[in-house]
Length: 236
Ligand SMILES: [Zn+2]
Image (cartoon, rainbow, N blue to C red; front, top):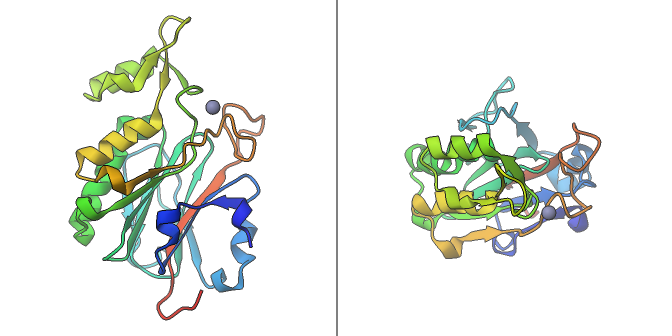
């Protein structure tokens, strides 16, 4: 019904207990209520602060929290990550029915949030990295994400590979950052298999269906990316 308003990953769409989507700009909060089967879901999101902090939702929290990654195995909760150029990243443990949603811009990438998320899922829920599925949604692409020397310096200080920053062909001390590759590499460094990592290959800056902080005049608008576990015995 709303298939055109959010993008899905075929491998994840085949999992019967899972609901997920990377929202376009036409997918608004009220749309979560447009499908009767989804109305019982609670929605949860964080005050995103470009950290590497993950929160586990083992009971529905009574207050908002600061952080940039969420994980749960409770049915009936949508974990929501808001983006406009940053990378939304989902992790799924198919056998343990665990889902996670991560917000990774250059700061989160520099703080290794994808690596942290995998390790935390392992510690908290016993997830095996080799069986985790990862979906990297639309974000600003490597042809469009121009960053300065400050970003390169911080990546270097964190010991991250600098080949994710391609020197600008014309401008000194300017680079193009490949967020998807940088996060993919972090996932692989933690034991995820290449075949289990799926990427949208869509640039928020180039694709007018999406929102781009760098392109759009409205700097507060965000895309809503969501993942959740269906209630048991549901026929959704
Ligand atoms: Zn682009």
